[in-house]
Image (cartoon, rainbow, N blue to C red; front, side, top):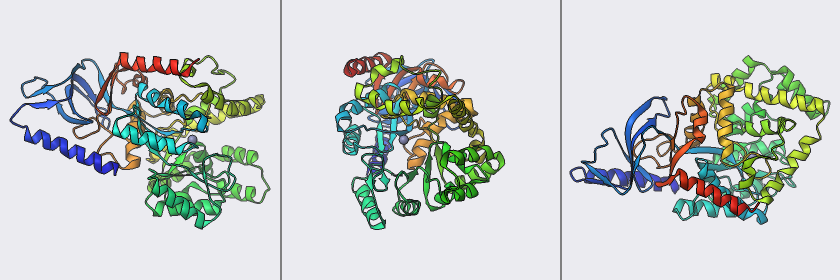
Length: 476
Ligand SMILES: [Zn+2]
């Protein structure tokens, strides 16, 4: 439904332009003399004027003279670099009904950080998330576009609250029916209490119904098998570390036969990881159109808690006390580690980052995602995406490739590159004006001069005011 609306509004804009070809065209907003970053090639197009009508980019003009058009609002974009709004493809809204309003406050926090689309990978307040999604689409609530999985599919008595717990295939079909009914944008399946057999069936059935499938992978299953059944994204990089060991099949067998515990198995998988073998596995995943959402920032935070406990982070001031409280669980678990375990965790984090060049060689898509929201300690909504992109660059992507993981691979996952992914006529008017060139330095993505969301302009001052309000609301 949503895609049809977008398509129609694009057509409407071109209709308007053709009707007015002899008269002056009236735009709502024109950003003049800016430098457009071509998100596909990395080329810079200087001195461009971006004309916006309603929530769409209506025209890109080399000639910024106002002979053929008028506009309600004009912005001088000289020296600024324009990119599409950023996508964070792995976030959560949750923590129970008492935290609904604190979660709602995260919506403007994403906007203030230049994140104009998020993919909600499920939790326990789905009805509210769908409500916000609809209000944001209508333009009555400020926030990013939300794509949501709705409640994820799990087994009976999973540790995660809010799941759709299924015991067998009949219940699985009913769960998928209900996801169709709430118009979930994709299906998330995790493996805390779901048997590997039912997990595999869930991937197949969701895929057969036309859903994109996002998954955590059960230990006894292989990513390549699930990719054949229609798994679209592997959530979290650690599953690709496991998949990159030539010993994976035999290690799985030992674990299933209870000859090996999980900790030892993970150590064996780590030790036997092989670059060449991993490359062939990732190529196979790529051929099945499976992408990875690395969510590395969380691994880094937990691995280096001994160096930085994040207690003094400025960003904490934007979050409600209830959300901050949900951070305790992972921190307490991590703090139980002894020195050797802490060292191993750091090695493991660096190993995960080192997979990036292998994935890049395989041609598999990396989709930027952070795991921000509740529970995942110090992964600050909005802020974290910039950190995540920087990790990709540290790991071996060029700044352009890192940018593409967010602004291109996000919409590519949902098949809506006709409406997103670049600055061009017919595209959604979600864009950032940056003070410096992100192709030279990815950190430029957080240096936002102005932002346009659904065609509405936010000056730096207005973004700062949003942040000030959020601090006040958080009540620290
Ligand atoms: Zn997650």
